Length: 366
Image (cartoon, rainbow, N blue to C red):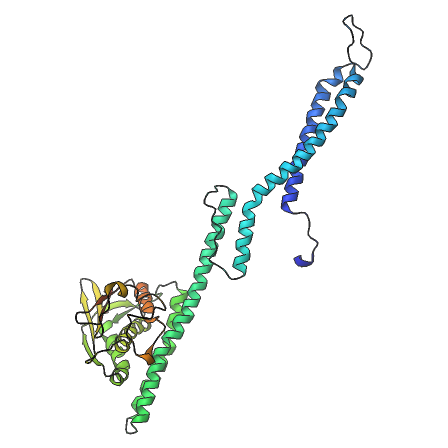
């Protein structure tokens, strides 16, 4: 294994020795040029001239060699020192990338190298590494959101099953067969919901095989499912469903409808609690509107209701139905996956109006 191998020279030392070695070779080549093109043509015998002393080859070598050795030593020192500094400067971006890699390995995916000022290979490497970290962080966050969404969404069918069981226990004369059928339908819906959320998470917020669905039928089914909860909370449910077709996942759209109505029921504090559910087609869009009575909510706060895990002042809810703030965020995600829009506005007289607009689809011919 690499951890047990003996560590060799660092890249900085290798570059330093390379710089110094090239500098020494260049100096040696320069001296060779002096020898080949100059000193070799100077005779090594005594040169007699009337003008005085003329040095021969030996005299020139005696005068030239000592300074040459000193110069080569100086080149070696300069090459090592300069090479060390230059190598450190050239390799400094690798330290940032290495640190980012260690942080990513430790689980911190938010750190970025950010070398926008560099336009060389290191800058390209840093940009590619940052892009990779962004994709990994997005993938991890998506998986975490899926786990949180799945656990949150499963609370609704489980709460419905508990409500049916509690009502059946308090009223022994009820039709047990109907209650068992409702429990089975809710359990099947929970299984289908889990599978649909997994498909949505893997598909990158797209619907692979959309089906043409009548939203009014989904509204009827969601109201029928939540009727026991509404009766338990003394909330009057009213539905006005006109045929409105759209294309998408029946399970996810049913969950969208169930979430909207469930939120309207549990986040409803009024003397005469009411919830209105309407579906209608308009201008090439399939419209779903869910209104509920309640306290007045400022418009600026409504804009944040689709943020995950948002709770606190401004959200009226029953204590035993206090959620973790994922209901509307999942509704928004489902709407976006179907190419629609979600809008929340304050309702006149208190409460909230939620309007979902989805692309209208042509109903299949029978």
